Length: 171
Length: 275
Image 1 (cartoon, rainbow over the protein chains, first blue to last red):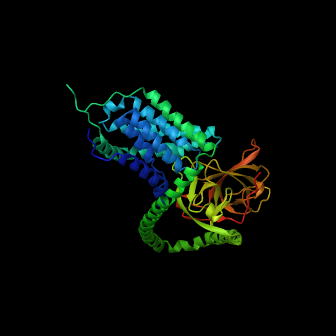
Image 2 (cartoon, chains in turn cyan, green):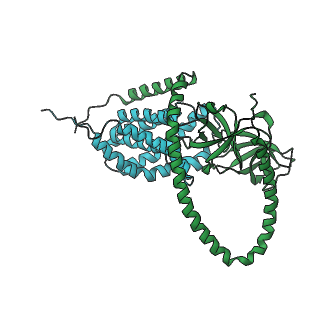
Image 3 (cartoon, one colour):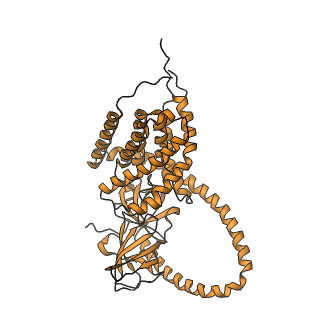
């Protein structure tokens, strides 16, 4: 078994991603639509590594997002877990070396994440403007996530290769 | 490379969903208050650093943009000197508007005597679907839930939760926010200002009998006691009146630019009524 990169690099990346999207990007002022780095990272990781790691990082990434959020605790975690599950069970891993599929997964995963998030907000008696939020926030965010997905995929695919566990074949 | 076969994905999902629901339940019972507070305190310096870095970059970028813009503007102004006469008419109306705004600002100045506390916005909600801002003052600075947050331009929101060193502010441009408001100069034109996903505000439940015009100023009415009276909110940019409706609705452009929120004031002297 070999590890090219320490185990703590992926969670650190998720933490930095959450910090960037919660504090750095909004302070720039001119960023009208904020990308959701944690969501796209979890989806791409789900495609690269499958359901087990996807759920683990969705759980960790969701908790970090909830920590940075003023909304009901657990909302981001639950939404991210469901998205990670769907992103990883569709056997997309078989085609994970093709960048198109993870990118498409990021778009639909982002939309699904927002829909679940809004649904959970509604169950907490938040006033949710479904149509307007989809038009003004959800779809633009999903498009930005999709546009940035190739770069995120390139980064995570490199990380995935360096942290991949190899097991020798026994004869 | 061979990877070991994964167990049933549904079983894993069930385990993590159960953990999340457990965490949500624990949080609702305030069992996570201490760890969340500790984490928030530990994160605050990181958020402050990231936010200041962003502001610095934005400042440099906007400086360059501003220079380019001024050059273009200067060029355009040279060509349009003749049009300045026509502009005078517009300037007069702007002067009137300015006078009204000064009155509003004077009101805000008056509230400075009520110990307004400056605070720095160090982050926004991690989700683009929620309208919260995080400021770098908390219960250590005697901030409490419900306190009004504003800038000299107008109303920003109110504090909904806090830790010793940070507070979470629900911004008025989020659909979950509701502020009792009135059209300035028309005491009967009261309504409820709620956020819209596009960042503008919607003022609802204005009686049909009231006359509303574009550019009318919208201020807090003080009804309900959640916000102080006469804090500027925004300006009417569009209104819709239909005979079949019981109430009018107007679109309000907020005075505060929520995308460039850097420093705010917390009105520590105003105690919101808890109904």
